[in-house]
Every structure is written in structure tokens, then in C-alpha cells.
Length: 152
Image (cartoon, rainbow, N blue to C red; front, top):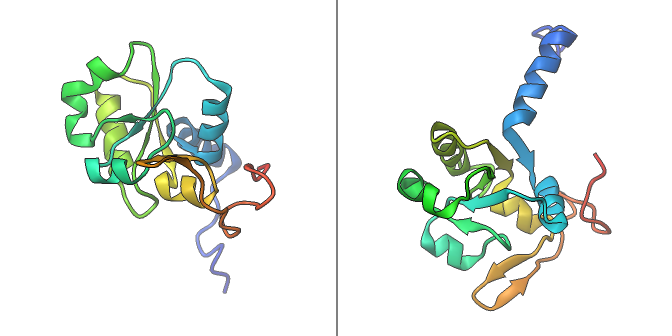
């Protein structure tokens, strides 16, 4: 018996539609870092965690907007016409998903950053803390140690 194909794979058209749909609502830390570094216009990255988490560290250029405050404060913090990327702690937390839902309901184009703050840090990307900009060593289980991209 095969475990991988115990359920037959979808036909290619169904699979293509599924993966296209996922990519329409999800992005990853490497792509977000590349877009932030390039100064991609109208991109707003939103940290949906609470104040203590924000203070502990956040992405450079991110906007702090906890999920519970999105409905009330998005219009004052997110310029019209912006595309939003949400993040929270990491893959074990669905806070970024809840935040992305709030933005979608408000009519913003939005994607969730897979891996969240955890994978941003594990890939050795810069974070802002109370002491300034810092980086942690790359975790070679999550990213190549010699570059910021996996070339996927």
C-alpha cells in the first residue's frame, strides 16, 4: 500500500486551480523581504501581534496593527490602494490568517505571510528591536546559510 497516493492526486487542472488560489492569498518571507528591499510601491506589511510581541521584535517598515484593532484603525493607518501582507508569530499561530480575513472583509487586497515572524528571524532577515536593527544567524534547516533566497 502507498500512503502518498492512498487518495489519488487531483487532475492537473484541479491541482493548478488549487495552487493558484493558494498563491493568491499566501506569500513567504523571502518574497516579502525582496519586495520590501526593492521598495515595492503600495505594499504595507502589517504585524498583527500585541504590543509586547511588537516590542520584542518586528519587521523593518511594518505597521503595528493588532487584529482586534483592524476594523477600527485600518483606514487611518493603511493608505487607500495599498496591498496588505499580514504576519503574526509563526506557522503554529493563525493570527495572521484572522488579520488577513479582517482586511479582506474591509475590501483590501491581502495576503498572509507564511512562516510569520518566526521564519523571518530563522532565515536571518533583519528585525527591529528596542536596541535597533539586528539579525540572528540563519537556521540552516529553514534557509541556505550563504544567501537570503532558496531559489525556488
